[in-house]
Image 1 (tube, one colour):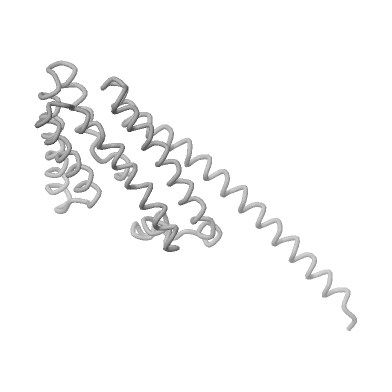
Image 2 (cartoon, rainbow, N blue to C red):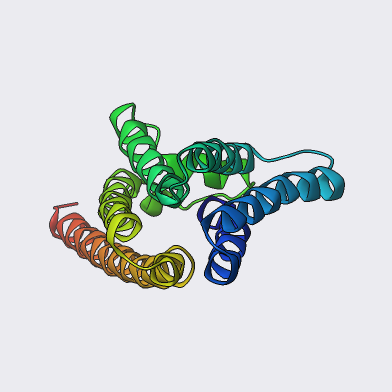
Length: 200
């Protein structure tokens, strides 16, 4: 889940401080929390995950641009860029026939059943579409929504919509697996009947 929550604390800090003290103070607070996330992981786990480096590195870079330009819009584009990168990575993994979801699961030591693996290309592509749509929404939110509404999309909006999407995917895979199992059972029954009808 780190993929989806990378940079969430800086977003909250930016939103709260910006509302009370203005854009510059909000940007500084968000960037400080970004550095804090990196330091916390380094202290607790003795290493920093790549997604944390990417998410917070991007956040600090865009935050710096926002400070120079005195425009918070660049900082707000961080979630959209992260989601866009993830969508492209998902599609690329399908193109090279190494679905990113399978790779990530195996890195965590999880063994996926064969019938699930067989459907990972389709699921990975659809997840890419999901994040591409969210990227467009996040860009729109950064440009035209209030800071509070933008932060709500980054935190609650993405989380809730992702949970709903994954539940639908699980139901779809389960239905497909049951259908496949039924077809295999029917084929096995036909094979047995044919064997019984053969003359000895």
